[in-house]
View 1 (cartoon, rainbow, N blue to C red):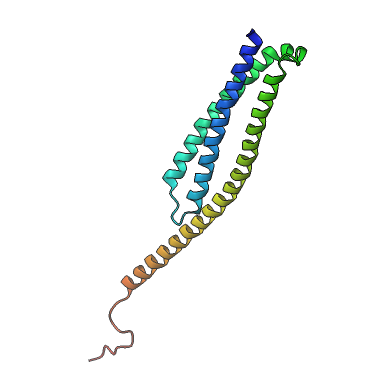
View 2: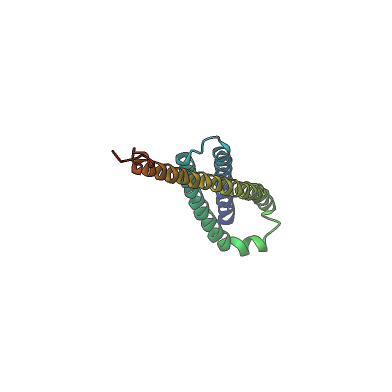
Length: 159
C-alpha cells in the first residue's frame, strides 16, 4: 500500500465520520420538530439540542477542513493515476453521495423547523402580550375599585 492509498483510506474514514455526524444532526433536527410541535414548548430541551448541534457542526467543519487539506495534497497524484485508484475513487464518490443526501434532507428539515419555530414563537409572543394586557386591565380595575368611596353620591347630608 503506497502513501496515496493510505491518504485515500484516511479520506474514506473522514467521510464515514462525517456520515455519522450527519445522522446525529438529522436525529436532533427531528427531535427539535417534536419539541416545537409539543403541546407545551420545552425551551430547555430545545436549547440543549441547539448546543449539541453547534458542537456537531464544529466537528463537521474540522473534518471538512482536514479532508480538503488532505485531498489538496494528493489531488495531482489521483488525477494522474485515475485508473490505479478507480475503486477508491468510486468508494469516496458513493460516500459523498450519501453525505449529500443527508445534507439535502437536513436542509429541508431545518427550513421546516425554522418556519415552525417562528410560528410557535409568534404565538407565544401573542399570548405574552395578551397576558400583559389582562394584567394591566386587572391592575387598573383594582386601582379604580380602591379609589371608590363607600358613600353614595346622592345622599342628602342635611339634618
